[in-house]
Amino acid sequence: MRKTTALIAAIALLGSLTACASGTGSSIAGCDPVVTAGAASSVITAPGKLGTAPKVEFPTPLYTKTTQASTLISGKGAPIVAGQPVILDVTIVNAADGTELQKTSYNSTGGSLITAGKSTFPAVSEGLECAQVGSRVAIIGSAKDSHNGVADAANGIGKDDSFIYVVDVKGAFLPKANGADQIPTNGMPAVVLTADGTPGISVPDRPAPKTTTVNVLKAGSGAKVKKDQFIVVQYTGIGWGTKTVFDSTWTAHQASVIQVGSAAVSSGLSNALIGKRVGSQVLAVLPPKAAAVSDGSGKAPADDASVYVVDILGIAG
Image (cartoon, rainbow, N blue to C red; front, top):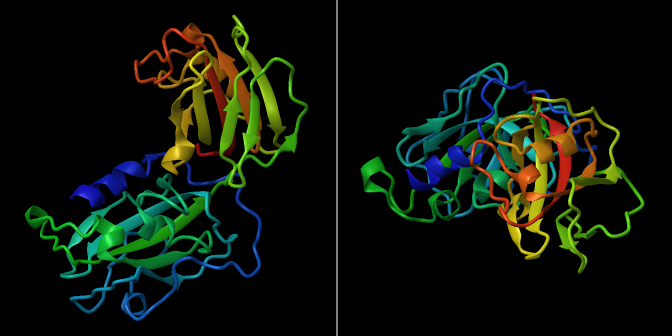
């Protein structure tokens, strides 16, 4: 199911991780949502307790040309802002005929991760802005926002079909590093941040350090990262010599979950992050051997030092 399947794949399944989220955003008065309630979203019901798979009910067929969102269960957490990674469970239904397309596990621990705000899945990511942690939200996405208005006859999806997403918001993390600024180190890459936290990295015209070098650019005050923990991060990686970005979660508008100390994360990057606190921004320069990932999944250059700027947004488990 093209975009539907891609949605579940893209919201980084967390399996049996704990659903508790450290570093949630602060309360925001008068939060102005991008997606609001409307005639279509208001007729959707989804009985059941938060965290259990709902029975989604609505009159069929149901269509909308604009994405709408209504709160079914009100939460008590802070409103979600653009850029915040969110742990959720979701049930996706074709609004044209009530067919359930997909749903997450609804385990008591864990969930799935999506970043609120601009993304390739605006129905969900933008529909969650201003929702509160602990809420259940019914989002009905337009055909354009749900599947680009492309029919999928094999899965019974028409080009004008709207999708319904019933989302249980289980937790949220920081949208960007919020620690105290630290004094930059001479000779290291300079980092300039946009308003949303995206880093611009300027590498000096000099040879890269021959050993791993780590600087804390922002010192957070949250929990310390421990070996083997799953942490939520935003990061950019560039080659020292090429000055070219080889990987960035900021570009994809999707935070990532990594397990420090695992085979999927390089030893150099794991060591740079272990012991740092949530809310920190870490600059790490890694020689090729330290940047290599033992399971072969890494994108770092094999013949160039790698420069990483990592925002530690929370501990997922």
